[in-house]
Length: 418
Image (cartoon, rainbow, N blue to C red; front, side):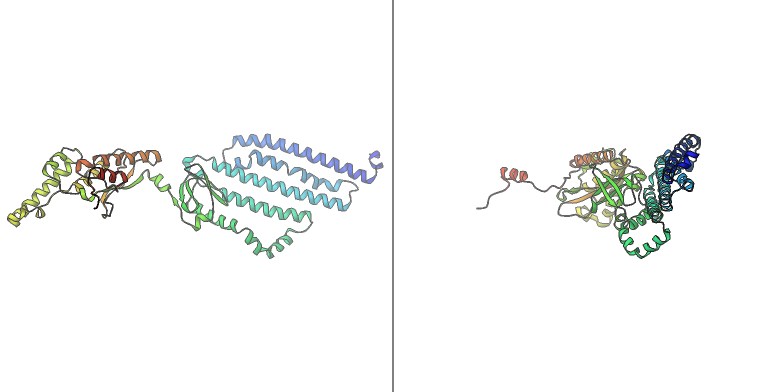
């Protein structure tokens, strides 16, 4: 003790600071060991989500880093002969470090909360609703207020003074954080109204997005397109502009087929008795033809009694057309197809004739939403319909090509002008 008192005051102060630093870092090592072993073991035995978040390894490690600065603040008055200016500076730095590590610990809590949320089973649906935007906003606020407190501690002023100064800069802050504010409000609306989830297939042509949502953050939403490229969309644009979300289709279990065959109008005509007899052997058409032929015979018999000899005129008789019969066949074929959803709308209709023929539209839903299977079912349906058209005396409309014109000239169908 005598030797210590015989040292110069500046030497005592220096040795005291070195000793205080050693004690601080020894306390840090001890705190980290205790937190990691004791609370880490407790974490393994708890099932509560909030407990596992608070006791995560990163949170405990960053909490242990708070201890050295606390020890310095407590032990600083004990250091002998330390000048007041040096004591103030070191104390302010220690306070700033304490705030910094506390902010980092709270940021680690938010990261652990997000990781826990994303690890939830997909069956619960919780992991599909991203909280990343809330977490990022929380980090931004923590860092903002933490920075104010740290600066206030370093300059030895009250944080309220800095906050009052920032009030005068509110217009500048609004301009700087305009996108952040818009994105946060949009993120809250998207989450609260369940408009967007991770895994949703969205289509937004104005930004070139057509694929699955893989990430929802505070400022951006990432979409992986079908060609495996990534499109980044500002979050606020999803509320200010329109986009298509295909989640409803996926949840319904059926994907719509809405495609038309363009029938050559010149091939539409009445069916002859021989053709009716041949078509009646088609299993899918037999019920329809039996019912229709009975109605036709009944109607024609009634007109015979009303019109007499005039009933033999074709215009006064009721007859079946090849297009109407083909439409009935398509309806029966779609209803019997194993790849078509039986519980959703099934319709075959004739649209308004155009210069490209008579559109016969097939409207139904497949029993799967998988893209590859959907295209296979749709292709199977229309392959069959195109191939069966000649059996009804119908043709698909096709614009003449150069090959058609050359063939016609070669056959002498076109006669050159003199």
